[in-house]
Image (cartoon, rainbow, N blue to C red):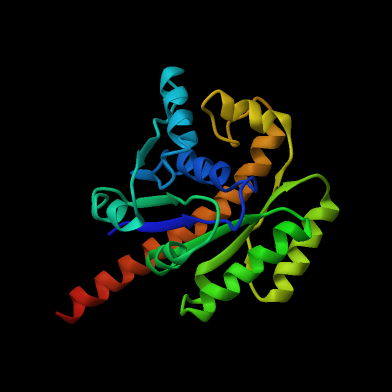
Length: 224
């Protein structure tokens, strides 16, 4: 079974698919990874992949549309990392996805309209039995360091982890994605570094889970 990272959001436009694409593009350098698009009607992620293929951008990134997380999991035994990009809005399906994921990532901007429902969503998942240590927030679409500080303070007070780094509101990020690139692949080195900080923080969680599994396998073999 692959490591599963699910990106969720209570509302659209907070950077969920942006972060999912970036994790896919960075992880594809070192492991077999797939992005499961659970919102094929919108088709934005699939369109991004086709643009990437047309420009022959490396590394190649695999995006497949599925009707559900269960279907994606059943079809992804061949990958090390499965990234699930969910439709905006939370419902019962969000809970099922969170239960199957090793890490649930929710991006948020600094406005109360973003932060309040984001934290409430995490509270609901915890209430339903999802371990708090699987939930983490990503700072997204900020305009200034003060906005990043607002997010970190609010989410930290609520008791949830916030990844290192942040994604600012920058034209270069949009332009990169329009060309089938990730926000770590813009023409501006400083913006790439800022995005990489956040994505590497995500990958550290993935690596920790891979190492935990490997240790468990070794222990099981030694006890056999």
